[in-house]
Image (cartoon, rainbow, N blue to C red; front, side, top):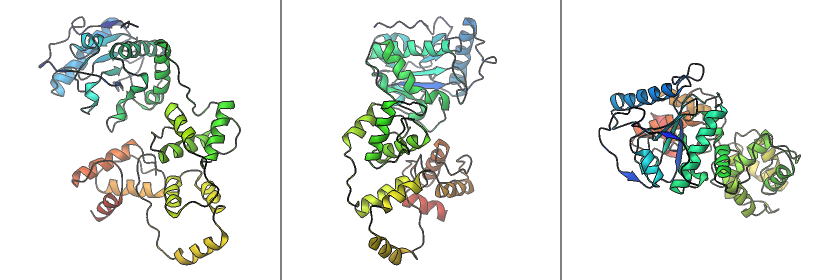
Length: 381
């Protein structure tokens, strides 16, 4: 399809010329943001065309005069009324030619080479209106078509930088956005399963998970919290983004991983498996299953040899981990002046950002993962 989205150009909404024209790039992604501004009825654009233009001008002013950027940081803006506006000067023309104007929206060099779409509002829990959603789908479909971007490469800001943007609700809807864009482009729609779904396909998923050693609970065809946790554990174990959503990547991995063998696992595999289950809601069930795979004599020998050894943290700790060790980490970060948010034992984006901040302050590799070096340094500081 051609570029069908109706976008108001920067010239039409009265944009200032940029301080400096930026180079064009070959885009690989579409990056979704929210403006973190009030939702209706207090939205800054007031749901009108003139309000949308005024909002675009105010954002450009803040980015140029406040942040010191060359122009608006984003490439496109989608207001509450579904009005689409060009952001950084030259973005609309470049996209129609399959290119992008380098911008400043992602906080990441790689991300800034792809178009960023700001969506007016704060979508932590607030849900986008149908009109704004439809305009977002139309714009994404047009960009995918012009730039030959696979809809699977529609990402959230938090995929590139430690941030809450585009809000928990909007980020959770990215899989739906990808599917809607595929439908708009008449592309095959990939099958996704998530919590709340039910049916024979969910039952098949549960059976496969169980055969791979990841217990979803009852094989009842209902995608509940137990199935979600089993999917997340499987995804972590196989290096897949642990979002609990079963899309093409997770399906392919499930179908390529052979069922678990009946003989006891090796010591290394047992340890690695326990690390992934530790602190999860179904930890006890997982350990109970492992116990049935080990002989009574071996368990008794293990208890005699190791029961007096002091308990140490199971590292590394990283985003997605839960439990008392994560809470201990959060408390220690707070003591050191790095705010991970509430010390709730859940390793989320805030905790990761605090870990990265601490690592940078100690000239360590800032990967947000708490390994032996980071744990030791944190507790000796």
